[in-house]
Image 1 (spheres, one colour):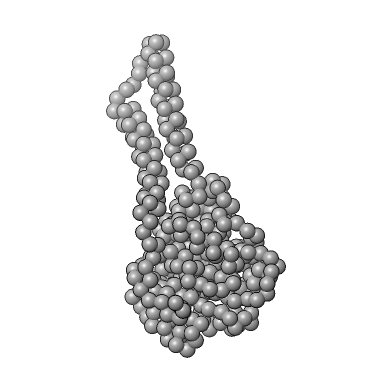
Image 2 (image 1 turned 90 degrees about the vertical axis):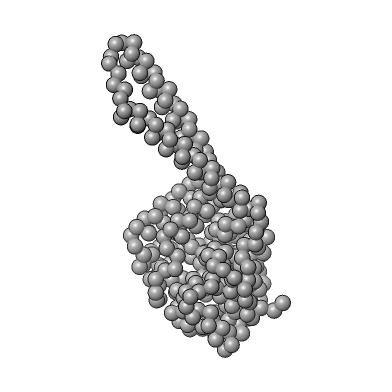
Length: 313
């Protein structure tokens, strides 16, 4: 592999004015050890704070700090994909701005890239500063995805990873609009390796991506890389039908032997709510898949750029 390194760091940002200056103070000395040919691409969702002003001021001091601002909030997954589209480096690192992704790991990632790996992803051993319920939900989500996904999506990973240019090019060719980077990278393939690390707490402020957002991203991983939920819907349908036949047989036997059958409202309510619940779950699963099909068929732009500073036409 060529050792001619040009490095792009893609950083999705929303309402991070407290973290951006410290992030740059930390990451620039580290990547400067690797190459002077680098760029830091801030993919900015329109923020109510001074995030844009701070990035623009840093861009004036150093043109290698670049701004990609969207016309509306598109969310972290789409912002990341946009950053990949605009990146130019032979190697691209995706990371968060809050320093929960330790910048010093970039040195080790690049070392692995020089050994011939196309993807080097950071794998969390511990998750400092996160509530217990969030850790439990994350563990459950990864457990489910690992067992039903059609591609190998590693556990306890986020978007913090290094990708070679050919991996980024292949991701940019994909037309899927859900933006689940972990799944897309697994789908593309090539040589991949993990670097374990202990994830620290945020440098400043609270997360801008609450647990409901994380669940939505996890749902994309669940539905966009597996049809197991559809199979589950069919299994529940057959199980409900089997339960109904079994209950009918039990009632017939009891009737023939003269045992008094207690019908009443409780029995009817239980049966109706059980069958209705299975039907609603099945319809909901179908709806989730249909909604994603609808999004893909419309083929709307994944994002619209309002402002791009530092990029050559």
